[in-house]
Image 1 (cartoon, rainbow, N blue to C red):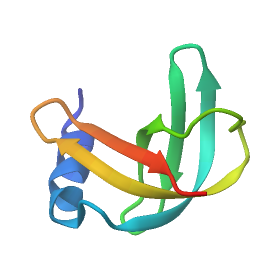
Image 2: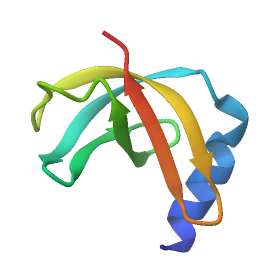
Image 3: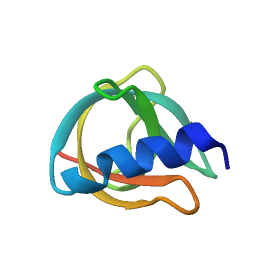
Length: 78
């Protein structure tokens, strides 16, 4: 975990339930990742990730953050 990931999780912690436009930056058996802007950060798509591929533009909903671990979890909003 990096300080940047924890900082992003903290910034987003008050925005649970908000939606963001993003781009899929990784898709594998280990998970699907999306990068958003404002703030620019990356998080894991933990719901609705089936069928997403790298480069896809997607709207995601912020589900939760974990500041201690620097985790940001999204759901694909289709």
